[in-house]
Image (tube, rainbow, N blue to C red):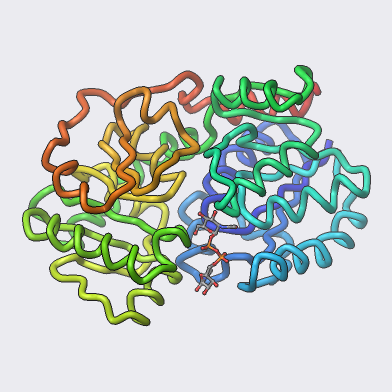
Length: 352
Ligand code: UD1
């Protein structure tokens, strides 16, 4: 059996790692295609190193562009690669533009597609990721889901029962595998932190592309930072917007994007996380660190149901929300967030 994994952007890499490790353990041939959607060392290669992944076999080098151009470039460059390697499964991850592009190409050429993290929905079609998720799931032949909610969503959308396989959350596999190692790298000490900080990540276009919205968020973060250290590893998109509008960051410590292990160490030692990222909602929940999500929807309702995450659509509410946070006693564990999701996923790929 041969798997061809397609990844492109930062959130894909922790999902690939446990699957490729498990596939290797059971002797499956694999090829990793990186589309090049993300290309900076901090957004890409550092993740491969931290996650113990060997460098990708093929890089399509598509780089940054508008959604349409980026998707089209991946499609154009991926087609000959797929025709050359002819895998049993094309395995796609999550919801980025590369996921959608590879799925369109493989489906139209008649190659079977397995979607890892199928059935996840925010219900907000203004997010490019939501469109990517819906189309990918509609076309994929095997829908490997991270939650029972995702199973129900796919059934309600009319997907056949025999394509839907609950496997659990592969991001949690990667996290549980890395957490011991992350504790040894001393990232928090390097930052000179004496108190548990608030860790912030924001990169959604809906939060950072409008000056008034980003200004309101930064104003709230300045107030939060007056009481407790705030560490903000800024995505290049966010960094560019902050600079373009010469935003006052106050005592907020803006740092470059951090590697996977640095982020795990930082989050585990944080008082709370403020984010708009999907992955960080999952990771903070799995580490038992309270999360505030600066959005009006989430694709991870189980993080809210288990009491670890709360939506804070209005940034003006962040200061009060931080003040009312109570530390979680134990890391809440939704079903299938147990470190074994990739084992179940590879079993499905072998037997389906
Ligand atoms: C993409 C994903 C998003 C994911 C995020 C994680 C889509 C639709 N969005 O958004 O789901 O949460 O990645 O980071 O696929 N840039 C760099 N260096 C890089 C990569 C990007 O400087 O290595 C800058 C470029 O200016 C680029 C911008 O970041 O234009 C946005 O990158 P892009 O991949 O288009 O989208 P993200 O916002 O990163």
